[in-house]
Image 1 (tube, helix red, strand yellow):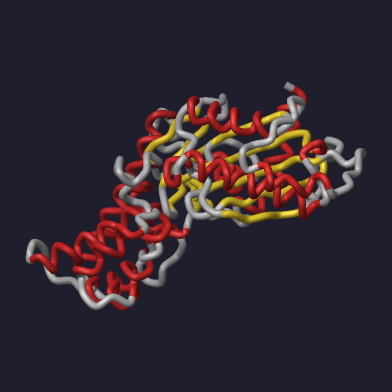
Image 2 (spheres, rainbow, N blue to C red):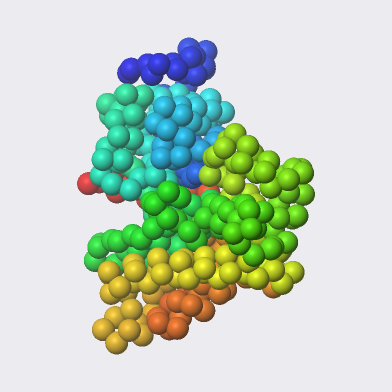
Length: 348
């Protein structure tokens, strides 16, 4: 197998004795904020599957979205988190049978192929590889494995992704902040920062966002926001200001309220676009379909519940939408989807 340029992270393999009769699978959930990898043993296929599925080790790292941090950093994060999981489990790459990635930033077959090439440089040729957008794992976490319906992710970034029972799929949004994911945590916070600057310049209305954000960031003047923003314009760092925007909206600030109302409309539009592309609502527009809601922006926020408002907006046009807030997180469901993907890869 090849050694990647940061090959020192695999040095543990020279010191770790590996059981030859314990093949493993690696499953990754990679987002704009963090990346989680689980290492689990290959199990004989059974129905039903053991509940819970055994997990040998779990490792966490930072952002693995190559659109956010660049290809080099994304690759290093993916390799580091996989190496950590294998090291903790007492395994190494020779024991790996399959690697299953659900990662944000996989928007086109070229993205998928790029990551597959990275993995092929790292793992032996026999290892089966599967790469998809993280929305696939998020949908499965709500439907317990069935890829049917629509998932809306709204955290640091946002994407709507849908599948039909006959295998067609479609997506909307998920193009990153520059191309307008305005319903995302980044989009909400970026608009709030812009509103503060506009108010300070006299180009926009006064807003309590000014004092609240300055206090949150320990700054003295809106002028300092420029330096703070561009010193490290990472998406997650800016998106962390969403709770401040929600608090200001709950306090009656019109500017903050308008920002959240606009985000609700944008998120609902993303779902509606996917529903229309896939005809999930049926010919009469009233057919039911699961709508999985995932991400910090959609969690209940006291009186200003963004997720609830999004569902209300969608239901006006598609009353058959059945909102699901997963009982398990994507990370908790990752072992199951990783194992099912392995079975798919093994028998294809």
